[in-house]
Image 1 (cartoon, rainbow, N blue to C red):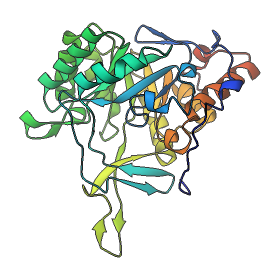
Image 2: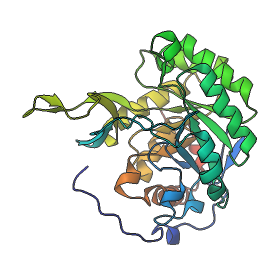
Image 3: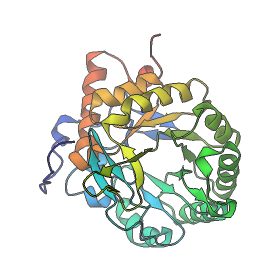
Image 4: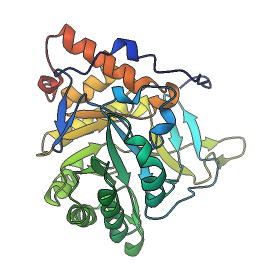
Length: 323
Protein backbone atom coordinates (compact mmCIF):
# COMPACT_ATOMS: atom_id res chain seq x y z
CA UNK A 1 0.00 0.00 0.00
CA UNK A 2 3.01 2.25 -0.07
CA UNK A 3 4.22 4.98 2.28
CA UNK A 4 2.74 5.99 5.60
CA UNK A 5 -0.36 8.13 5.28
CA UNK A 6 -0.75 11.60 6.70
CA UNK A 7 -4.38 12.66 6.97
CA UNK A 8 -5.18 16.36 6.86
CA UNK A 9 -8.33 17.56 8.58
CA UNK A 10 -10.30 18.92 5.72
CA UNK A 11 -13.83 18.62 4.36
CA UNK A 12 -14.52 16.00 1.73
CA UNK A 13 -12.82 16.86 -1.55
CA UNK A 14 -15.25 14.76 -3.55
CA UNK A 15 -18.21 16.95 -2.65
CA UNK A 16 -17.79 19.32 -5.58
CA UNK A 17 -17.87 16.40 -7.99
CA UNK A 18 -21.15 14.97 -6.76
CA UNK A 19 -24.48 16.64 -7.28
CA UNK A 20 -27.64 15.52 -5.55
CA UNK A 21 -27.96 11.79 -5.99
CA UNK A 22 -29.86 11.10 -9.17
CA UNK A 23 -32.20 8.23 -9.92
CA UNK A 24 -29.45 6.74 -12.05
CA UNK A 25 -27.43 5.91 -8.94
CA UNK A 26 -30.17 4.66 -6.63
CA UNK A 27 -30.53 0.98 -5.74
CA UNK A 28 -32.72 -1.12 -3.50
CA UNK A 29 -31.29 -3.79 -1.22
CA UNK A 30 -33.25 -5.76 1.37
CA UNK A 31 -36.21 -3.47 0.85
CA UNK A 32 -34.11 -0.39 1.61
CA UNK A 33 -33.70 2.37 -0.97
CA UNK A 34 -30.14 3.70 -1.14
CA UNK A 35 -29.40 6.97 -2.96
CA UNK A 36 -26.28 5.32 -4.37
CA UNK A 37 -24.67 1.86 -4.12
CA UNK A 38 -21.57 2.86 -2.12
CA UNK A 39 -21.41 1.93 1.57
CA UNK A 40 -18.47 1.88 3.95
CA UNK A 41 -17.36 -1.49 5.30
CA UNK A 42 -17.57 -2.43 8.95
CA UNK A 43 -14.36 -2.11 10.91
CA UNK A 44 -12.82 0.41 8.51
CA UNK A 45 -14.93 3.49 9.19
CA UNK A 46 -15.28 3.51 12.96
CA UNK A 47 -18.81 4.39 14.00
CA UNK A 48 -19.05 6.80 11.06
CA UNK A 49 -18.90 10.03 13.00
CA UNK A 50 -15.09 9.87 13.29
CA UNK A 51 -14.85 10.47 9.54
CA UNK A 52 -17.13 13.51 9.49
CA UNK A 53 -14.20 16.00 9.52
CA UNK A 54 -12.65 14.34 6.47
CA UNK A 55 -15.55 13.51 4.15
CA UNK A 56 -19.21 14.44 3.64
CA UNK A 57 -21.15 11.54 5.14
CA UNK A 58 -24.30 12.69 3.35
CA UNK A 59 -22.73 11.73 0.01
CA UNK A 60 -22.56 8.05 0.95
CA UNK A 61 -25.22 5.48 0.26
CA UNK A 62 -24.74 4.06 3.72
CA UNK A 63 -22.43 3.57 6.68
CA UNK A 64 -21.84 0.12 8.13
CA UNK A 65 -20.59 0.72 11.66
CA UNK A 66 -17.87 -1.13 13.54
CA UNK A 67 -18.99 -4.57 14.71
CA UNK A 68 -21.08 -4.48 17.88
CA UNK A 69 -21.20 -7.10 20.62
CA UNK A 70 -23.44 -7.53 23.64
CA UNK A 71 -20.71 -6.30 25.99
CA UNK A 72 -17.71 -3.98 25.40
CA UNK A 73 -14.70 -5.73 23.96
CA UNK A 74 -11.05 -4.69 24.20
CA UNK A 75 -9.83 -6.70 21.25
CA UNK A 76 -6.50 -8.42 20.81
CA UNK A 77 -3.13 -7.28 22.17
CA UNK A 78 -0.70 -5.62 19.77
CA UNK A 79 0.81 -5.75 17.33
CA UNK A 80 -2.47 -6.34 15.54
CA UNK A 81 -2.07 -4.74 12.13
CA UNK A 82 0.63 -5.00 9.47
CA UNK A 83 0.93 -3.72 5.92
CA UNK A 84 1.26 -6.32 3.15
CA UNK A 85 1.84 -6.03 -0.61
CA UNK A 86 -1.34 -4.45 -2.00
CA UNK A 87 -3.17 -4.74 1.29
CA UNK A 88 -3.07 -5.16 5.02
CA UNK A 89 -3.42 -7.88 7.61
CA UNK A 90 -5.37 -7.17 10.78
CA UNK A 91 -6.21 -8.97 13.99
CA UNK A 92 -8.00 -6.19 15.85
CA UNK A 93 -10.17 -8.73 17.62
CA UNK A 94 -13.47 -6.91 17.06
CA UNK A 95 -12.77 -4.21 19.67
CA UNK A 96 -15.90 -2.13 20.27
CA UNK A 97 -17.81 -0.14 22.89
CA UNK A 98 -20.68 -2.60 23.12
CA UNK A 99 -24.20 -2.24 21.79
CA UNK A 100 -25.57 -0.21 24.72
CA UNK A 101 -22.83 2.44 24.54
CA UNK A 102 -23.30 2.62 20.78
CA UNK A 103 -27.02 3.27 21.18
CA UNK A 104 -26.46 5.91 23.85
CA UNK A 105 -23.35 7.70 22.58
CA UNK A 106 -22.87 7.08 18.85
CA UNK A 107 -26.27 6.51 17.27
CA UNK A 108 -27.75 9.92 18.19
CA UNK A 109 -24.90 11.61 16.29
CA UNK A 110 -25.42 9.41 13.22
CA UNK A 111 -29.12 10.28 13.10
CA UNK A 112 -28.16 13.81 12.03
CA UNK A 113 -26.99 12.60 8.63
CA UNK A 114 -29.09 11.70 5.58
CA UNK A 115 -27.27 8.44 5.12
CA UNK A 116 -28.44 4.91 5.79
CA UNK A 117 -27.04 3.33 8.95
CA UNK A 118 -26.35 -0.39 9.06
CA UNK A 119 -25.25 -1.97 12.32
CA UNK A 120 -22.81 -4.86 12.04
CA UNK A 121 -23.21 -7.36 14.88
CA UNK A 122 -21.43 -10.46 16.16
CA UNK A 123 -21.48 -12.78 19.16
CA UNK A 124 -19.93 -15.80 20.80
CA UNK A 125 -23.29 -17.55 21.07
CA UNK A 126 -26.50 -17.54 19.06
CA UNK A 127 -28.24 -15.89 22.01
CA UNK A 128 -25.71 -13.02 21.91
CA UNK A 129 -26.54 -12.29 18.28
CA UNK A 130 -30.27 -12.28 18.97
CA UNK A 131 -30.03 -9.96 21.97
CA UNK A 132 -27.86 -7.41 20.14
CA UNK A 133 -30.25 -7.40 17.18
CA UNK A 134 -33.23 -6.89 19.45
CA UNK A 135 -31.65 -3.96 21.29
CA UNK A 136 -30.73 -2.21 18.04
CA UNK A 137 -34.27 -2.47 16.71
CA UNK A 138 -35.68 -0.98 19.90
CA UNK A 139 -33.23 1.95 19.69
CA UNK A 140 -34.49 3.27 16.36
CA UNK A 141 -32.32 4.97 13.76
CA UNK A 142 -30.79 1.76 12.39
CA UNK A 143 -31.90 0.83 8.86
CA UNK A 144 -30.61 -2.74 8.78
CA UNK A 145 -28.45 -5.26 10.62
CA UNK A 146 -25.41 -6.91 9.05
CA UNK A 147 -24.60 -10.19 10.75
CA UNK A 148 -20.92 -11.12 10.91
CA UNK A 149 -20.89 -14.91 11.09
CA UNK A 150 -17.08 -15.20 10.86
CA UNK A 151 -16.99 -15.77 14.62
CA UNK A 152 -16.50 -18.95 16.70
CA UNK A 153 -19.46 -20.41 18.57
CA UNK A 154 -18.07 -20.94 22.07
CA UNK A 155 -20.86 -23.37 22.93
CA UNK A 156 -19.90 -25.58 19.99
CA UNK A 157 -16.21 -25.91 20.75
CA UNK A 158 -15.17 -22.90 18.71
CA UNK A 159 -16.63 -23.93 15.35
CA UNK A 160 -16.98 -20.83 13.18
CA UNK A 161 -20.60 -19.97 12.37
CA UNK A 162 -19.67 -18.86 8.87
CA UNK A 163 -17.90 -22.04 7.78
CA UNK A 164 -20.64 -24.50 8.72
CA UNK A 165 -23.95 -24.12 6.84
CA UNK A 166 -25.92 -25.68 9.70
CA UNK A 167 -24.48 -23.23 12.25
CA UNK A 168 -24.99 -20.33 9.84
CA UNK A 169 -28.61 -21.35 9.39
CA UNK A 170 -29.17 -21.46 13.16
CA UNK A 171 -27.72 -18.03 13.92
CA UNK A 172 -29.44 -16.26 11.02
CA UNK A 173 -32.76 -17.93 11.86
CA UNK A 174 -32.45 -16.66 15.43
CA UNK A 175 -31.55 -13.13 14.37
CA UNK A 176 -34.37 -13.12 11.84
CA UNK A 177 -36.89 -14.04 14.54
CA UNK A 178 -35.45 -11.44 16.94
CA UNK A 179 -35.86 -8.32 14.81
CA UNK A 180 -38.11 -6.75 12.23
CA UNK A 181 -35.17 -4.92 10.69
CA UNK A 182 -33.76 -6.12 7.36
CA UNK A 183 -31.04 -8.72 7.90
CA UNK A 184 -27.86 -8.81 5.80
CA UNK A 185 -25.56 -11.80 6.29
CA UNK A 186 -21.82 -11.20 5.84
CA UNK A 187 -20.21 -14.34 4.48
CA UNK A 188 -16.67 -15.60 4.97
CA UNK A 189 -14.53 -16.51 1.94
CA UNK A 190 -12.84 -19.25 3.96
CA UNK A 191 -15.21 -21.97 2.76
CA UNK A 192 -15.09 -24.69 0.14
CA UNK A 193 -18.27 -23.69 -1.70
CA UNK A 194 -19.77 -20.22 -1.23
CA UNK A 195 -22.98 -21.32 -2.96
CA UNK A 196 -23.76 -23.72 -0.10
CA UNK A 197 -23.47 -20.88 2.41
CA UNK A 198 -25.67 -18.63 0.27
CA UNK A 199 -28.44 -21.20 0.22
CA UNK A 200 -28.14 -21.85 3.95
CA UNK A 201 -28.55 -18.22 5.02
CA UNK A 202 -31.29 -17.59 2.48
CA UNK A 203 -33.20 -20.58 3.83
CA UNK A 204 -32.77 -19.01 7.27
CA UNK A 205 -34.46 -15.82 6.13
CA UNK A 206 -31.69 -13.33 5.34
CA UNK A 207 -32.83 -10.36 3.26
CA UNK A 208 -29.45 -9.79 1.58
CA UNK A 209 -25.91 -11.12 1.56
CA UNK A 210 -22.61 -9.26 1.80
CA UNK A 211 -19.24 -10.73 0.83
CA UNK A 212 -16.40 -11.22 1.13
CA UNK A 213 -15.08 -10.90 4.62
CA UNK A 214 -11.28 -11.02 4.95
CA UNK A 215 -9.14 -13.96 3.92
CA UNK A 216 -7.01 -15.60 6.61
CA UNK A 217 -3.32 -14.75 6.25
CA UNK A 218 -0.01 -14.61 8.08
CA UNK A 219 3.17 -12.50 7.99
CA UNK A 220 6.47 -13.70 9.47
CA UNK A 221 9.32 -11.53 10.77
CA UNK A 222 12.25 -13.50 9.37
CA UNK A 223 14.83 -11.87 11.64
CA UNK A 224 12.92 -12.77 14.81
CA UNK A 225 11.42 -15.91 13.25
CA UNK A 226 8.11 -14.95 14.77
CA UNK A 227 4.71 -13.98 13.42
CA UNK A 228 4.36 -10.20 13.13
CA UNK A 229 0.86 -10.25 14.60
CA UNK A 230 0.43 -11.19 18.25
CA UNK A 231 -2.29 -13.64 17.22
CA UNK A 232 -0.10 -15.14 14.45
CA UNK A 233 -2.83 -14.96 11.82
CA UNK A 234 -5.18 -12.20 10.77
CA UNK A 235 -7.60 -11.03 8.11
CA UNK A 236 -6.17 -10.03 4.73
CA UNK A 237 -7.90 -7.12 2.96
CA UNK A 238 -7.09 -4.62 0.23
CA UNK A 239 -6.54 -4.79 -3.55
CA UNK A 240 -4.70 -8.11 -3.29
CA UNK A 241 -7.96 -9.94 -2.57
CA UNK A 242 -10.17 -8.16 -5.12
CA UNK A 243 -10.02 -10.78 -7.90
CA UNK A 244 -10.99 -13.46 -5.38
CA UNK A 245 -13.82 -11.28 -4.07
CA UNK A 246 -15.20 -10.54 -7.54
CA UNK A 247 -15.15 -14.23 -8.37
CA UNK A 248 -17.01 -15.16 -5.21
CA UNK A 249 -19.61 -12.41 -5.69
CA UNK A 250 -20.19 -13.70 -9.22
CA UNK A 251 -20.59 -17.26 -7.94
CA UNK A 252 -22.90 -16.17 -5.11
CA UNK A 253 -25.05 -14.08 -7.45
CA UNK A 254 -25.49 -17.06 -9.77
CA UNK A 255 -27.59 -18.85 -7.14
CA UNK A 256 -28.75 -16.08 -4.80
CA UNK A 257 -32.40 -15.09 -4.63
CA UNK A 258 -31.56 -12.09 -2.45
CA UNK A 259 -29.44 -9.02 -3.33
CA UNK A 260 -25.66 -9.16 -3.00
CA UNK A 261 -23.42 -6.46 -1.51
CA UNK A 262 -19.86 -6.90 -2.78
CA UNK A 263 -16.62 -5.94 -1.08
CA UNK A 264 -12.95 -6.76 -1.12
CA UNK A 265 -10.19 -4.39 -2.21
CA UNK A 266 -12.33 -1.67 -3.78
CA UNK A 267 -10.16 1.42 -4.22
CA UNK A 268 -11.73 3.15 -7.24
CA UNK A 269 -15.03 3.47 -9.09
CA UNK A 270 -13.74 0.98 -11.67
CA UNK A 271 -13.19 -1.56 -8.90
CA UNK A 272 -16.71 -1.00 -7.58
CA UNK A 273 -18.18 -1.39 -11.05
CA UNK A 274 -16.50 -4.78 -11.42
CA UNK A 275 -18.53 -6.06 -8.48
CA UNK A 276 -21.76 -4.50 -9.72
CA UNK A 277 -21.39 -5.90 -13.23
CA UNK A 278 -20.55 -9.31 -11.70
CA UNK A 279 -23.86 -9.28 -9.81
CA UNK A 280 -23.65 -7.02 -6.74
CA UNK A 281 -26.47 -4.57 -6.11
CA UNK A 282 -24.24 -2.43 -3.89
CA UNK A 283 -20.65 -2.36 -2.65
CA UNK A 284 -18.73 -1.65 0.54
CA UNK A 285 -15.46 0.27 0.65
CA UNK A 286 -13.05 -0.84 3.36
CA UNK A 287 -9.26 -0.67 3.31
CA UNK A 288 -9.38 2.34 0.94
CA UNK A 289 -10.68 4.41 3.87
CA UNK A 290 -7.28 4.07 5.55
CA UNK A 291 -5.53 5.34 2.44
CA UNK A 292 -7.96 8.19 1.77
CA UNK A 293 -10.83 8.99 4.19
CA UNK A 294 -12.68 10.57 1.25
CA UNK A 295 -12.35 7.43 -0.89
CA UNK A 296 -15.98 6.27 -0.72
CA UNK A 297 -17.31 9.69 -1.77
CA UNK A 298 -14.86 9.77 -4.69
CA UNK A 299 -16.06 6.34 -5.75
CA UNK A 300 -19.65 7.60 -5.79
CA UNK A 301 -18.53 10.46 -8.05
CA UNK A 302 -16.70 8.05 -10.36
CA UNK A 303 -19.73 5.78 -10.69
CA UNK A 304 -21.87 8.81 -11.47
CA UNK A 305 -19.47 9.79 -14.26
CA UNK A 306 -19.58 6.26 -15.66
CA UNK A 307 -23.38 5.99 -15.83
CA UNK A 308 -23.56 9.40 -17.51
CA UNK A 309 -20.96 8.43 -20.13
CA UNK A 310 -22.76 5.17 -20.87
CA UNK A 311 -26.30 6.60 -20.63
CA UNK A 312 -27.28 3.88 -18.17
CA UNK A 313 -28.18 3.38 -14.51
CA UNK A 314 -26.61 1.37 -11.72
CA UNK A 315 -29.69 -0.85 -11.67
CA UNK A 316 -29.14 -1.74 -15.34
CA UNK A 317 -25.49 -2.56 -14.66
CA UNK A 318 -26.19 -5.10 -11.89
CA UNK A 319 -25.33 -8.57 -13.17
CA UNK A 320 -24.77 -7.33 -16.71
CA UNK A 321 -21.59 -9.38 -17.21
CA UNK A 322 -21.32 -10.81 -20.72
CA UNK A 323 -19.95 -14.34 -20.88
